[in-house]
Amino acid sequence: MARLVTRLTRRLGIEHPVVSAPMALAAGGALAAAVTRAGGLGLIGGGYGDGAWLENEFGQAGNTRVGCGFITWSLAKQPHLLAPALAHRPAALMLSFGDPQPFAADIAAAEVPLICQCQSLDHVRQALDAGASIVVAQGGEAGGHGHRRATLPFVPEVADLLARLSPDTLLLAAGGIADGRGLAASLMLGADGVLVGTRFWASREALVHAGHHAAAVAATGDGTVRTSLPDIARQLDWPKPFDIRVADNDFIERWTGRDDEFRAAIEQEAPAYRAAFAAGDAQNAAVIFGEAAGLVADIPPAGEIVTRMVDEAATLLGEKAKGFLA
Image (cartoon, rainbow, N blue to C red; front, side, top):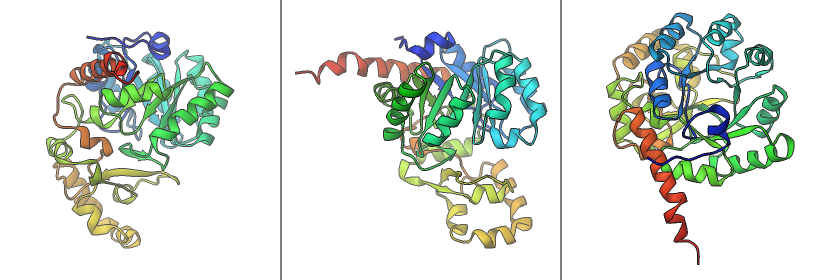
């Protein structure tokens, strides 16, 4: 297969500039290891802080070199989870949705590269103050939590900011990237690689119910919305300004515009929501994917996704690009 060499591949010692997102509950050790074995870098999702789960998933990755990611505001409530994760000598440690500064010194002392996911220019500056080695510019097209910036203008704006303030800091693009077209475009926008969520969520190794996978294959990018309803259902106190992109389904339609009523009924509604999610009911619980679901037509092994993405990007950046030159 083709190989794309960037500052990211050189810095992390990987073959391809493709990193799988540390998606809470979906990105376990098997997925992370499969992405790494295919030449990218896989990240285990530390999510909301289940230490036993995290240890098990590092075990599932075996001796394969993987990284890990945490939801920063949740880690702040359970800071004791950081040391065990660092003890596994992860290839990188990613923090998202909150101030990384309280954890930066411990991560640096462990000589682990810090990745900070950012949704605004202020977030990028905060990441640089914390000594981030890699910044992720996440567009609002992404599945799961995020904010409002669009990937296409946000990535080059962050690239320009880094060039001025911290040229050695690497940049990953995220949000709506699911194939070689998105990878090639991201590199042209100034990114050193990509962080991919939805496309790897829709892989065989992901910890995702088959019912949810089927919903993604059937979906288009039009069929997603940004909302806070799943967080209310799960009784998660997400800080502003973040909300979550999910499939637009019966659950969303039933409660949209009725947030206060939903909160008032949560003691009755939460158990039904949890049961629906566990059963893979794609209409009565959140199905967490982004606009890139419109580019998902199958559920292949994660390694095959890496291969497809890199080969397509290499073709676009090579032979096909010549067709635009007069």
